[in-house]
Length: 145
Image (cartoon, rainbow, N blue to C red; front, top):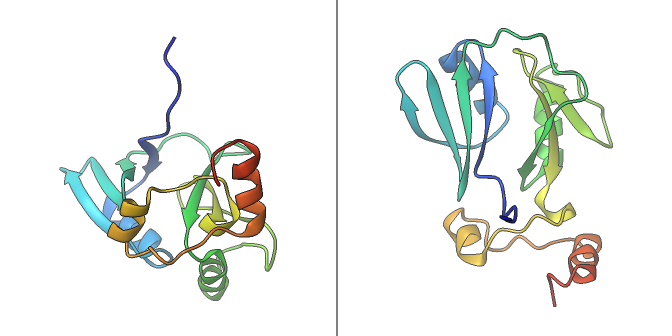
């Protein structure tokens, strides 16, 4: 039986790709990896990516969501609050984009998910360190010194 190793990408359905890239670009610093015509766009996140696919037709997400990892969750929160996006002023950072995708933003330093040092260097994040709580969780699984 094959063992799960990770997630290569997540695909989000949106309306218009250019509008979606503009909207997400207001809150996140990212590079566009490429496009497949007017149908898909690929946002680079180091050794992974997010695919945006045009043509969302389903209703907004309820509890179904995915977690997007950032280097500074509170900077995202401040920018979203300033832009009038309905997010909590503290605690969990969840939002629905204009197309109904439910996204939860988490801080890299708070979670077990770990990028390889060379990937962090390539992303210009080589100085970022895990908080002690995340390090303890990793040690508890035998995944850190």
